[in-house]
Image (cartoon, rainbow, N blue to C red):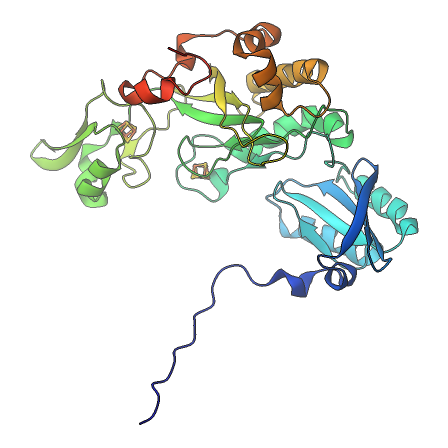
Length: 358
Ligand code: SF4
Ligand code: SF4
């Protein structure tokens, strides 16, 4: 009896990156002896085989047009042995096999408008979410806020003068692809969604929308004889989760969608366990194109952290040592009722909060 044909697995996901590595990285993969940082923006790795690789890191704007990508590729071909890679914070890295190539590469990048830095204890490029360009639910343009902020923080990107590395992020809604960061700028809706009842029945899967609400604030309703939805505004926590599956429940608002700043998030296990962020400033105006109110707060927090933290303390370690009351005193940020989680299911998580213990 013939064996049944085995179906081959359908390969999907990220392709094997080894085919794209610089030849020296491929040759010495997993076999490195030591590394150092000769200057901000440059890494130097030495392999057990004796091979040496210098990596030059530069900031990019993440969302790039084809001309900018061609410019970066031309620099890679001319000055950097034809290979590049991107870091998770949208920095671009060029690898070279000789120290003599580092200077001309740095010069080529800087003169083309790509600042070299972002290594070690610097403020790295801001990780940001997709914004208006790719996503259908943003309340702000995350990449625009990044540009405005990095224009102000470029000096700290070029230097390694922070107590430890500083990771920043921006998120253009409250619920989806933002991540933990030392300082995060996140959209904050302050009013329940406005419902366009004429469209709900045509556009929305109503049971799915009802199920989506984390506080059970949405109910099916008949409005003007049409099937629609209604929101119990006393229960609504303005999270925005109903808007993606049901665009007629518009939550973005030019006046009432604000920005909040959170601090102390960390993904890594280095030195201390990972931490969640806490909100420290709320209700900041969502004020394009330069978001000046947000920039002021972020720069204030960074300046106090730089001045007050001990060497190698991440922002969360520093706050943990001095305590949250001292954090608000030192940064001169007001502690308001809006920073307290008043969701009625919060009895459990208030006990886990740094703001209130009882
Ligand atoms: S953070 Fe939200 S709005 Fe922004 S890209 Fe991600 S899912 Fe879309
Ligand atoms: S914004 Fe959030 S809490 Fe309010 S109705 Fe929509 S899903 Fe529920």
